[in-house]
Length: 78
Image 1 (cartoon, rainbow, N blue to C red):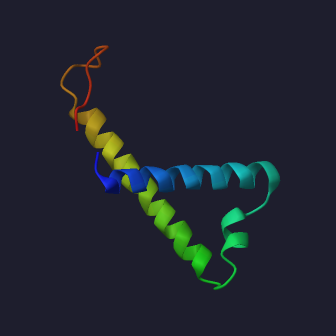
Image 2: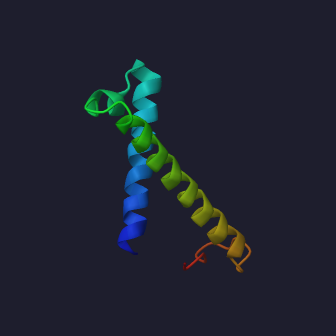
């Protein structure tokens, strides 16, 4: 797996944790960590959102491209 895919997966996990913490405690971790510039949290949220879109595209391309008909043990090798 390429380093790009690891970075995208890491950003998706960070985004999921941020949303989970925000939902449970109403505390915005990213905005509180990146207070040095008012645009920094917004840029970080945009990057995390793009990582989520890329992950979704990869998931859809993989699942829609499988030729095994969903058989167990088979799957996408992309």
